[in-house]
Structure formats: C-alpha cells, structure tokens
Length: 291
Image (cartoon, rainbow, N blue to C red; front, side, top):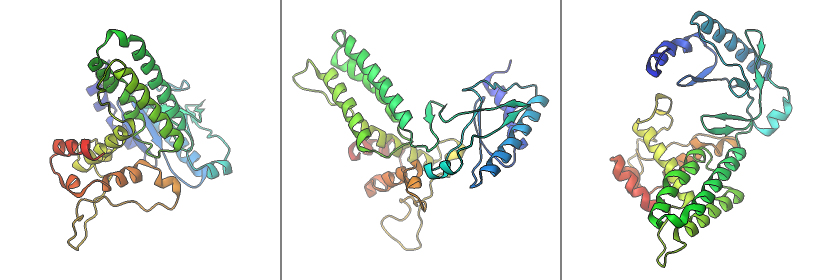
C-alpha cells in the first residue's frame, strides 16, 4: 500500500495516456473533461478516454470504483444547448456502463448542468443554518468572544469556500446571506450592551475571492491557476498600467457570471494603491478596509 506521495509519483504518468481530454487530479480523485459544440463528438472522445484509462489501470494494477457517486458522467452547457441534446452520455469502462448524473459533488462543491450552483448554495445555507442552531443551543455556556470565534472559524468558512466560485448575487441569495448575518449577530451579542462586530458574509466571500485572484497573480497556487489571470500591460504610461486584470471577451451572459470574469472585476474595482501593494500580508490588511 502506497502513501500519498508515492501514490502521486506512481500515478503521475496517467496524463500521458489521454490526449484529447483535459485532466484535473486531486490525490486519487481524477476528473476528465472535454468541450465541443457536438454532442456526438463529446461522447466519442470521452468514450475513447475511458478505454485508454482502462488500459492504463490494467497495466498498473489499479482499480477504478465504478459505483454511482464515485465514477459518473455529466453534461454541462447552457439551458438552451442542453435542451437541444436531451440525451444522456452513453459511456463504458471495460464493458460496464458509467452512471450518468445531473448533480455531482466534486471536492465539496455540488455541480449542476448549467453551473448556476443553486443547489450548492442551498445545501451550504442549510448546513450554515444547522450550525447556527447548534451555536444558539450552547450559547449560554459560552462567552461572546468564544461564540464569535466559533462563528468565524466553523460557520463563516462554509460560505467563503463554497460560494467563492459563484459571485452572482441574486436578490434571493443576498436575502439568505443577510439572514445569516442577522442570526449570527443576535446569537453572539444577545447579552451584550455594546455589540461586538462580526464579519459580513457577503464581504467575506468577496474578500476571499479577491485573495484567490491575488494568489493566482503571485503564483502561490497550484500550476493550473498560475496563469489564470492576465495583467494588462499597455505601451502607454497610465496609472493603472500593470495593475489591472484583462477581462475576457464574453459573448454570453453565462460567461460573465463565471469566477474568472466576476473575480477579475472585483479585483479591478479595488483602489489603485491596494492593487499596487506588493506585499501579500499588507495587501490582505488593506482588504479589511476596502471590502
């Protein structure tokens, strides 16, 4: 049995077996994906990728878990495009059918076919509400300081982790976030004459997103994200030269709702001096004031 490091070394050459699809690996969790305007093209390419992955697994004495929720196929796209192709993907692995799903939990985030992430937010909100209820039930034996500590370390991170990828704040979502803030404030400050400040959930999500953008620009992230954002460099000398992110051209509103576009806009909206700050820790402290 191999430890994590040896397993990753052993499994690292898997990518060389698959040529047409792209691959995301997280330890032993591997995702294959491919984009095309043709449904048949997607099915054929991914089908061949599974065939090649079986060859690799057989040669290296590895076993892929084909149970539902472990190995599944999913089709993404706009609502209009998905309606044009209502079929499910028919894929096989060593003769066995691959389960097809319209809802998948990947690394803690629930994905849906149109990537609107509503189900992900609903489940996150439900978990946050459950933990707030638990905090309410034990508040009598805790000081206000401890209540706040529990909220900021065990409840608020659920929102900043799951919701960073979806920065489109609809009225429905804003109302839910406001209710979290109100309930947390009441629980933490119920017996205080001078209420203590608690972090605003919406601001925390935005701050978390901007910090991720900065880490991408600094290169302090995994290799997949090191060139994720591109800084605009103009031949003309301007105040914003070298500190603005180049926004991608999006023909559809769908693209403008993505993390790449929305997070870049948030970063570009920061004050010039904040964006110019080279030291990450100082940049982080400035965000406490700006967002």
